[in-house]
Image (cartoon, rainbow, N blue to C red):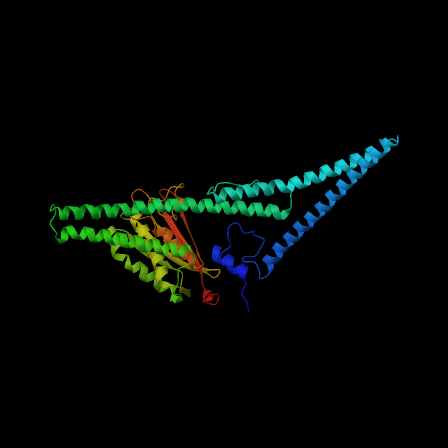
Length: 380
């Protein structure tokens, strides 16, 4: 059976998820054959409107010429022309109405063409005013164009910000490595382990940054391969918490777990999901003061497994909370690259789940994520 070329093209460009500009009332991707029918309907209506306009203008012009000939003939023969004045007015009104209707259709189309040329020139901030009048298909086209240009503008802004952030993150370790190597070559420092190990540490920082960027880019592009397998979620949580026990004890932080009974198995990638937990736990321990608590909770409800990591740290300011899952977003005291929570979000979304955070200054922070489990497993 032949594939659906339109649906395949949409998936290639926009991925498997519904784009933000796609109408909510329409299925995505469109069922096989629906897109050509939608396009065919618009073209037939446009062609019909063009033929009607052509015939109407032909009729108006013929009527106007006939009236002029009749008036000229009657005037030549000494007849009156008063009888043709009402007809002349009617024809002129019809002509004006038709011209106005054509202008209402042509004006937004002209604006759309001008805006498309601006986008082609690199001006992604251009928008076209959606007029209340005009064909429905034309209004939908203008709305889709505005959504497309907005998406292009956002992508260009993100690209520039990402380039600046990556440059900033690379500059620090490279500067440290360059300074230490120059000192070694100049004989300022001896080439002993005490002066070589910092250089090695910075190479590890660079390697981790490259790995994180690759993971994040693959996850956001929907190209990250997940090696799913039936996984004991309860054991996964227990092992993840145990791996941070020494770090928590050294920081004087109590690390506790609260699992709601026997958790079901889930079809997930255990390595990637453990990476999510590691990012959340390390972040919670970093901001929890000595004597505080980090608590990991898990439960199942409505066919979804819910995992929460709650700390008793200072909390997150309200203006910063919406941005904590953004790439390279970090607090002033953070020592990382600001990619941990962004990677955690991308991996959870890749599993078909959701992640969110709630916090208030002085009341700690709770990071929680959910992902689906098999219907039969959720009832165990």
